[in-house]
Length: 190
Image 1 (cartoon, rainbow, N blue to C red):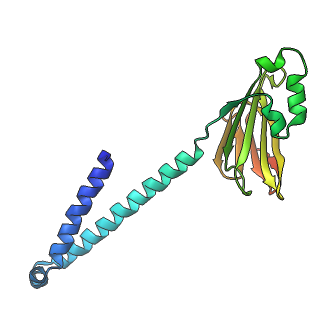
Image 2 (cartoon, rainbow, N blue to C red):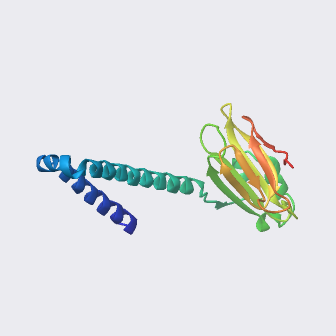
Image 3 (cartoon, one colour):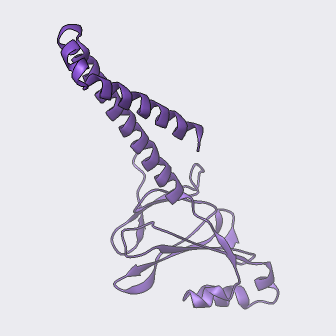
C-alpha cells in the first residue's frame, strides 16, 4: 500500500473512531455541556473533505493516464492496412526509402466519435521536412474509418477532446479543433 493510501486510511480510522465516540450514549449526555456536537460536525466535514480530495486526486490521475499514448512501431505495410494507400505508395515507391522510414501508430480518444482514433506518424526521407513529418489521424465518421486530420508536425498534443496542437511551443505551432467531421485549423487570436 502506498504511503498516501496508508495516511488516508489512518485518518479515516481516527475520524471514524472520533465520530463513533461522539455518537455514543455517554457522549450524547456530555455533548450538551461540553460542545462535542460541534466537534462531531467538524470531524464529519473533515472526513468529507478528505474523501473529496482523494476522489479528485484519483480522477486527475485517471485523466493523466488516459492522455499517455503509447506509439507502437509498425511496418510500412501497415499503411495499406490502415487505408493510407497514397502514403504507402509514396514510402514504398523509391528504392531504399521504405527501409529508412519509420511508421508509428497509436490509438487515443481525440474526438467525439465512436471508438478510439488512430494516430499515424510517418518519419522518413520522403515524409519529413523542416517542420516535421506526416501525421494522419483516422476516425470513425458515419460508420466508416476516414481521415479526420492530415498534417505535418514533429509533436502532437491533445489538451482536451476535440482539440489538438501540432508542434506546441514552437513557431510552427498549429491549433486544430474538431468540427464533427474533421479537424480544422483554428485561427490564432491576437
